[in-house]
Image 1 (spheres, one colour):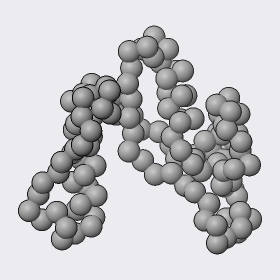
Image 2 (cartoon, one colour; image 1 turned 90 degrees about the horizontal axis):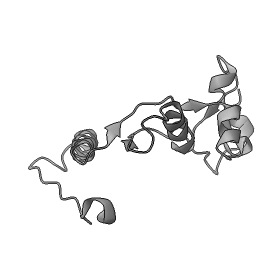
Image 3 (cartoon, helix red, strand yellow; image 1 turned 135 degrees about the horizontal axis):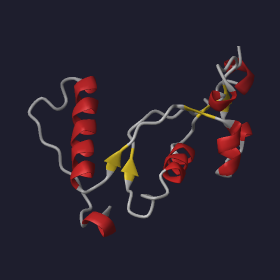
Image 4 (spheres, helix red, strand yellow; image 1 turned 60 degrees about the vertical axis):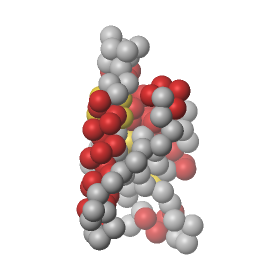
Length: 123
């Protein structure tokens, strides 16, 4: 952030900032999105599920991902642990813009909890 945008810190000020945790999250997300858009990035939206094929193309091991027990299709059989495969896919589908395209997404990722075994999720 410092090299590209010349800033190390983003300061957020609001009178009601600590009263409602949901409001704090929404407020922060909106401020961050506004700043990133102002700096020229494009917001993208991608699915939370990824395919085994996409993980293989982006050199991520599908064994490390939570597998959906009854996926609707082969394209959506794993819950993503990060947004890198999805974003690489977006960039590959927009090759004419890829050199000048800067994207961001604020989204959920899904990590396995250490207290449960992977098979507990595959019900």
